[in-house]
Length: 159
Image (cartoon, rainbow, N blue to C red; front, side, top):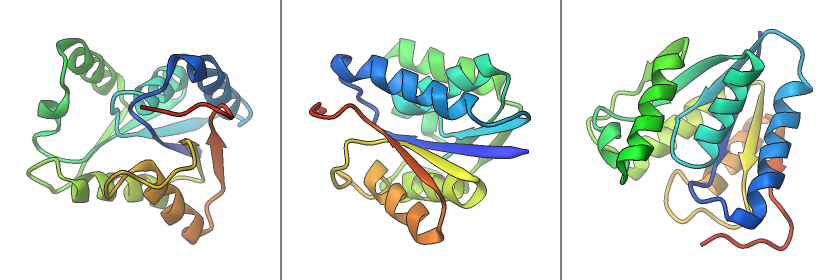
């Protein structure tokens, strides 16, 4: 089974969304069956990737950083989307962190990088804003020798 993991920004600007969505679809469909998709199901890139992977027929593995991860979703709709995707996952990996901290997010990202054959990064190319951000996980995956596909629309800056 081929495994594709995702790391990416929580905020995808509207002017980049269609480009990012198309890039994720391409990454998911250029690989033959069967496929396992690894995601932490965070708002933004992680959830978009998970929805597209499920639509493609991939097996979804939800990598949950901490016991209180559900409390990190700011809006009720975001939490509902997370819970729906988590319920559709064929496998759940729960990391041993009580609280959602930068260390827990970093551990989730590195777990995904450690267990995938390729990492897809929805990334603007800038350094991470905190430990465990997209830039950190891309750097980690590249140090492992993992192939990394970066998806971002040139000239677009995120908030």
